Length: 115
Image (cartoon, rainbow, N blue to C red):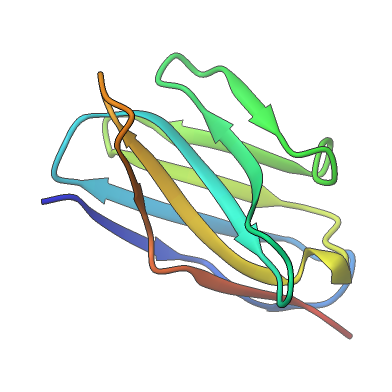
């Protein structure tokens, strides 16, 4: 079965950096991505990356966050720089099974940006 293990969240001061990781297992995956959900808000796309390396970013994180993947390790990373208080949210890893439209979600990791 598909398993996702997220890590890297935590508390950071404004302007700081964090790196999230998500290790996926149990299938072959096409798109990998990160979403986030802040209290009282809808879940939104942060960034996604295809198996070929094409990326899409949410407008609010463009030029600050970088998504990457290691296909050999089935791992997706999210490097977050210049963090702002409005980046505070639970961040969820999302993976899509190759040749399908079936998605799986991680359990979420809390990112808090505060002084």
